[in-house]
Length: 370
Image (tube, rainbow, N blue to C red; front, side, top):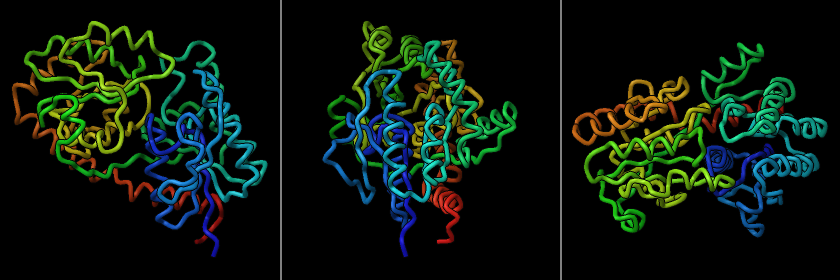
């Protein structure tokens, strides 16, 4: 029997080396292959080497793009959809609402499509008027052009239902904790187990790295804050909070794979400061590793962390500093919240369950009983 052929389109590609969509693509695709599906991930040539045709059983199609802030994603998705339309896929997953405009290419070729819209992208501070207009139009297209609309949080599902009377299927992210011993990454950064705070995110305004750096000045003691991340096309913004920052703050750039798991395994607490988006994979992962999570109190973040989180207001640096100081002073508090986070993540965010739900969705789209 032929295997169900599925295309995953719209991210930078795998292995994951950027953000949430790339994490989804890697974790989901490799598990779908183990479930018996034939999976192709479309990758950008500046993210995945052209010679890399396969990754853990997943087929990779590497295509070029125009590497600019506004054209990187749409140009690559256009080329990917044109290529995929000639490959006889049984179903496709397209991520990022701005890519909705290209879905008719796939549907015209007879490929049913699910569109993953994440959060309300037009609210991101990094977009100027042109970007905001593109996402506003895409948001409206997203409720009409795909066969299935996917949201990753109940708050986002309610938004589309209330504003567009559009139903969607909520499919979250997962975590598969694989704790590791202190190793090369911590040694290189001069870190000791449970003696550093961790922040992981793209350095973009709506993720508030500048406010986290500001808040840390008011926290006493000598514990480092490790701020992992970076951002293309945002040099001026990144310089605004990295130059002249508190000397206890470390900026090691982006870290993935074993090094990332090493930091998650040994952080004293994890800081999550996003204000736009649905369920964030980095928050789910930090919880799964048993970290006490200090979280910007948006509705989406509260939905994920529930009663395990310590909540602050990203617009008021003092509210974050107070929580961090409390964690320095009270080991029992961080241990209790860390246990709560691990228990909650284990119950709600399981990659095995998530991948099985996606596999069932693809079978439904294809009208397939396999």
